[in-house]
Length: 231
Image (tube, rainbow, N blue to C red; front, side, top):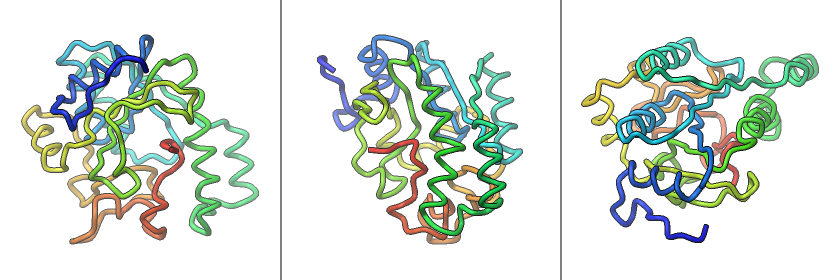
């Protein structure tokens, strides 16, 4: 990246970060959408700013029904084409035949193996041909995301540009934006969920717990990434 990219620390808005990142990428850029509040907000911000942002999603085969509802609502509201990527059938079949349906709860290694099949490999296909990708990650979410940059080079995926326009937003800011703009919202948030992934790996959080405590709740906080955002 030869040009200077403003970070949100310098006062850049999410729309400015998106625009700068897209310009730095110099080619097609797509949002990796899990239909979280963050991703929905990014879609709305890009739409209002008239930015050329594609959207792709990974269907792991174990998503909640409520997540698909948000996908349909977004497609209708923004006339959005979502590019879906699924894990390779043979890999999933082999995993479940040899390891069972819940092997990911037996150890960190087995959980990462499941994520590699259901998320990481499809992501590699989704990023093929892209110059950059966008996430809804925020620094506040967990210790694994505390050192994020607004725009960075993703060396794990061939050096393409990675754009994180909401890195400094608080959960409160996100909720306010969602309500003010009447954005589609996963019904699970109303049931105590604060971060939503695959159904067997996500639960509602308890009072006093941090936002991602409901993700892989049997693991230590420093391990709570699936491999999509390796650094």
